[in-house]
Length: 121
Length: 418
Image (cartoon, rainbow over all chains, first blue to last red; front, side):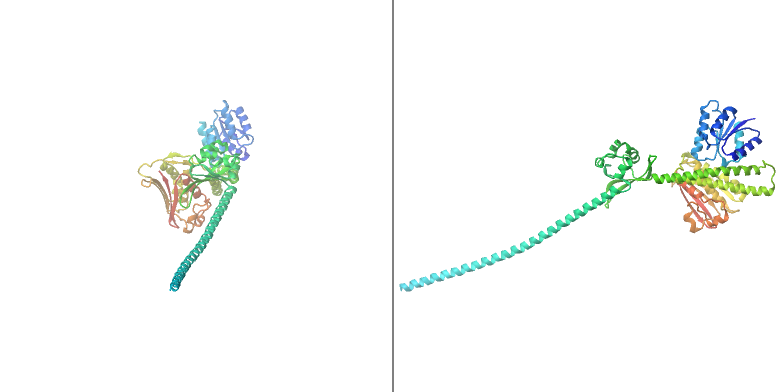
């Protein structure tokens, strides 16, 4: 069973995507901000991270940057799942090493899960 | 006898004398007359001279007046120049400073006395550290341009214009540099755009939640739903999608207005880009019962510099309109051709749809424009699609125009230089 960590500050969005992921038999870990996200990442060693960008305390870009500096985390695939959708944000995210950049409003939960499955295969 | 003779002689002598006297008197009179005439002439000459003197005095006075006037004019001009609320520098034909006003010193914190700046060539101005960004934008040749934005530092943004100065006789006198402090305007613009961006971003989060929820219900993740429920929820889902689209359009418009809609240019096969957008609409067009065609050119077109993401969005908006505003049984035909003679690639998107009313045609590319017939037909449009398309096409040095007749159809054309 693959482990997925979701770092998302919006409670309802988190619930929705978690519900869907559990249906799909993933093991889920949740964090509501960047700092907690990094902490849980080290503990749980997830196979994939769903990362929001605008987060309290430490934003998603910073989380990504720190992950890449940490040998134990650098290889974990990260999907940015954010509503920032400008080209600069997308380029910045991908440059920092995210596997994909998904604008929340443009994807359904099923589409997101399809993309996750492709990466985890 | 003797006596008589003597007397006779005396008479003769007397006569001679009197004659001589008379002659003398005559001569004298003549002389006097001549002198009087001369005097008269002299008097006349004096009058003429006096007249000339007065005339000369008048001329001198006029010259003085003119000189004063010129002096006043010059003072006025330099006072205007000096007190102008925008920074002004006038470079002569040799690119040396001929005039500079205090506003320039204020903008650049120049401590140097103005008099010492005058006569300096633009190349020598590099010694003044604060002027370097300005010199860089002007170039050593001082190229003519209009309203370029120059960021000096975070709290100083200038709008720079270089204007060639000609006399009435078309003689080149030099160039005038106008420096307008637009920091405040730019900050307001930035705040406005930031507001739109943040508002749009904030709106996207609840809209995402609605989208995901509706989708999960529709996918029956939370149990079965009946046909009626599905019907209504599908419509709700579509409304939500429209809202998401509107927000995307608003964000794009905000970016265009911010001047940040920068283009990432790469040489591209435009046929391929257009075809990819075309394919996206095939299904919708088919469902609607439209004849939907893409006419590819027979030969390969030269690649042109494009921003694929943006140009796809422009094509998307144009084809979307064509498909939306054409009724079942109609036709949408997209063609692309190489006009070798004009060195242009011409794209046309022709429909047989509702058309644009003639009295509204000059407003088609305005923000939030929507034809009344379009609003009746189709409630979905945001009125931003064509505004966005035009801005993208023009940013890529292309042109866009259209021909349309109400109830007969519309053809949009775009031409790109190649």
